[in-house]
Image 1 (cartoon, rainbow, N blue to C red):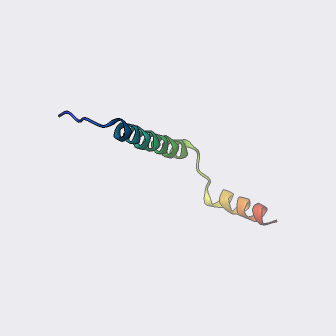
Image 2: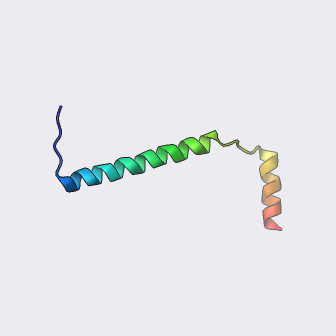
Image 3: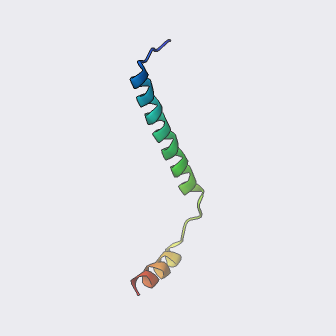
Length: 50
């Protein structure tokens, strides 16, 4: 299969692909971060309110 793009359409495609790659990386980084447990979260919430 061959696809031909006009220059402006190709730039748009690259922009969309770049955005998608950044989102995939952002989600991956979030998943790699350690998560807080319920008790830890309640302590942070209390401290944030004071």
